[in-house]
Length: 172
Image (cartoon, rainbow, N blue to C red; front, side, top):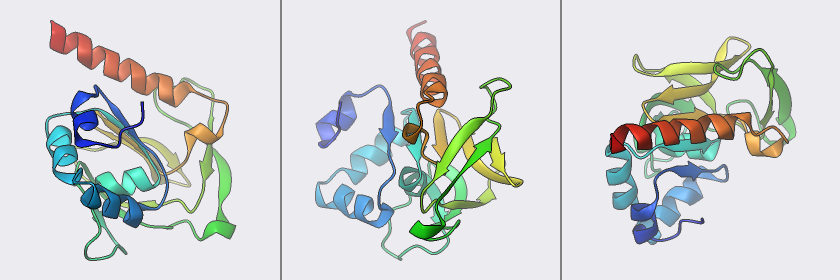
């Protein structure tokens, strides 16, 4: 279900925050009065799967961001926008993703952010050339790449399993 209104943010059990343009996403959150509701839900433990710009939005700090750019601090990481290069530097690479077994996952890195710092409570789920490209903190999974650009739904299924487990735990 698309989420465009504060009431819709209130109604979801989990949220996927996609790629796109992170400064524009932050401006839209403010223009449509969604930022406060989103921050409150995130602080309350709303599970998220974030990719690329979504990861930037949920980071603690944006190394090369604009002073007015939204960073919710949900993930204790510092990121650099377009850290792997511009559009023409986009690439694909295999990564070993914790929790997905022995099969590698094909990461699609499109103007991808680079995770430059990882806080103590953040677990690195995948690395590329020894750099973190997927992290988890609490109920939040953040990816620098786009899993939706492949036919491989294992990361999405892993996230949904996490959401179901949390829902069952809360119901008990």
